[in-house]
Length: 316
Image (tube, rainbow, N blue to C red):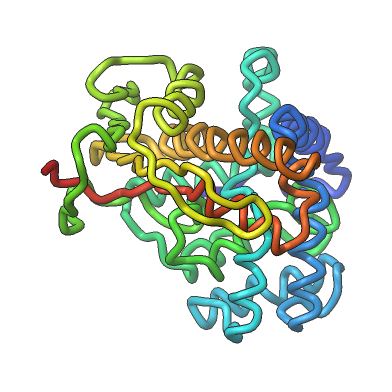
């Protein structure tokens, strides 16, 4: 089903993947996120807790086989706590540069091993099987230890592993299916504090009922968080009394929404929160958020909490 003739070649050079990785790095650099350091921190943490034996490709394949056989990662509470302390772990490794993507030759994608990853998620959409066993089994059909010596696939592996650990967190986009529309119990919140982002079956974005381009979403979300939503006063360590947003972003989708587009929209919302956090980090601590110590990061997180819900709010 996912057989790729190029995957059998011993001289596979990963040129397509390397270009995708550079685009991925640039996406995060443009948003003041040191994603290389984040990925290395995740790997070091998994080695420390003996999920990975080391940073070799063989060690990555061992973990993927364990996921295939156990349908999960066996973790301890300390690892769970520490993985949540690493901010801005990416939920995917998608290039979002339209100039780069428009310049791709279709044959470059078809002939790449990355095409197998695309096929896996297309299959997920078709059969609605998001089990870790299924994903791991499909990966092992094509990928081997040598592939995970490449930084692109090493990064994909770390994203998948961290998302499995954070399976119940809303940012774990890569390791879960699209939420079923409106299956969660509605919750009550003031109407002016709800910002509804709806992705329809045609992959169009509606922000509070108006169709927008996905590239506009980040700035619109930032305006809602900083200006439109009501504020409440909180007293925070090191920075004292501050006003924080009471707003919540309700991310909703049609059952026909594509997985890739859903993740793209989700990432734009996360960028909005990241940029606001960085703004306050510079204002109060003269440093980017990622370079703050844990205590200062907690202060900024409490000032700018990420409130994205996939439940449908009930307006009061």
